[in-house]
Amino acid sequence: MDKSNVTIKPDRPVTSKKYLANCCMKNPNHQMFKVTDGARCVECNGLVNVKEVTMDEHYSLPTYTELHKSRNEKPSKSLSISVDMNTDKMQLKLRAIEKHVGALADELDAIDNTEPCDRCGCIKTETHTLYSSKTTYETMRCSECGLKISEEEFPNRLEGSD
Ligand SMILES: [Zn+2]
Ligand SMILES: [Zn+2]
Image (cartoon, rainbow, N blue to C red; front, top):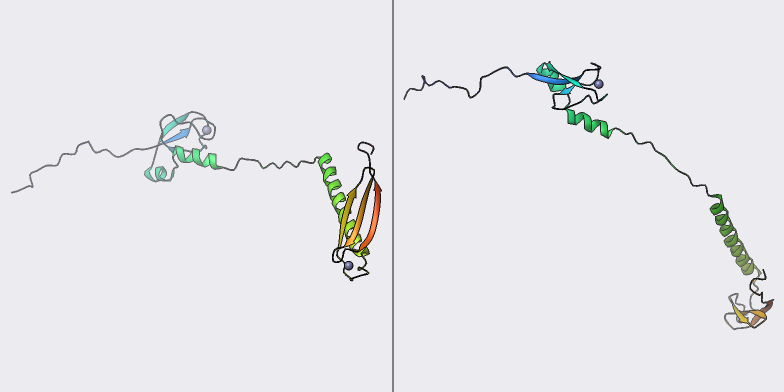
């Protein structure tokens, strides 16, 4: 079986491969890329020519899709911070703070002013509020033995008479 006479016929004629690139017709300095059907210059969206390049050049060229992708990934969003300086709300907040700080100060004052119970020496107190038609009675009693420490009377304020 001598195979030396068998000639191998290539399917296609062997031609040297051509390396093609697209380059901008308007400005040759615009980025070239590997040839793509229907492509436009990625920098000015202008028409492109097909140009033959060397294999090395072609190898270093980006593809059309790569270029588009990298352009879309460029940070183009501008950072905007909107500061809502609503002075009406700010005033309400300040008033709320004032109110709570005031209440806290009153409570701390009350603790400072609390005398130990005459009967048992305890300083824990309970305030009992009793409402009558015209007057509110606030009675402070020792929470241990129930001794009355103080009693205050407030005239009831009619609603809307502020
Ligand atoms: Zn261009
Ligand atoms: Zn007591």
